[in-house]
Length: 338
Image 1 (tube, rainbow, N blue to C red):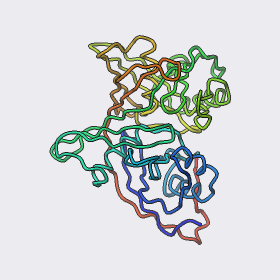
Image 2: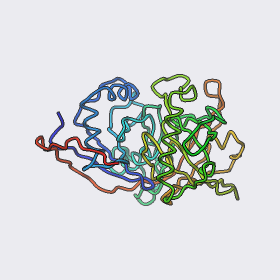
Image 3: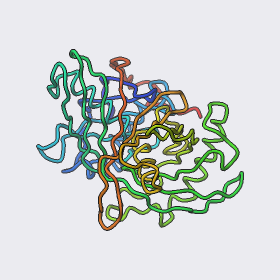
């Protein structure tokens, strides 16, 4: 049974929505965030709560949000279950940035009037940090420091309805297939979005059960989360400049440059030698917003070369909502018209 009201605080990060449910009215069982995600997937009450918040008329096909849950231990400030119209994801950089802003703006984590404070967050893929920067009591930027990220495989062949391509598969908290949009005669532009969505779905589902979609240590992280299309805009003065759009879940479009997707791209670029020390990634989105990416550390992670990526962006509050659930409404929990 759904509650009669649900309170949320909404943000956007680079244009991508993030709906925060600070006090979920449905209990999510589990001893860790990763375990809570696994149980949430099987829990009809939690799924109904997710569905009513991201489906029309309260949401839309590309809605995104998170339920706050206890962290794995007292070394983290909070835990979160990320969700979208198709279920619960393993990672979310834009959501982590929004949670960092929310935690400091609400006083959940105390920050200096001018300076920085770390908000430590447990997510299904591990422990991440939102480093929140303030000037004169105003949050001005957030650094998302992610879990180690790496290249899974290069030159993976995929057949699509538009032709054959080769993709690079990388992990950035979730597993992504990445390729230049130009490989199929496209560019990362709104007028090509329908093709990018359709072909992105084809690539995801072609590889979702392939060996490249298997996480080496945690099967709960298996599967291709999305397809990252990018345009290479050139290198200059210590910058690599790319524009991307991530088509994730089943045809959802990230309006931001995608936080965990940017981490996957940083791993790919670092492995290709395009991110020497001091070089950063300017990662633009399909709507013109920008994240800045950098490699904080290069390391051996379970026998494979990996990087610790950092993605810098900003989130802005768009509103607070108290959604009503009428038990007589025949359209509860909602619908997706796409």
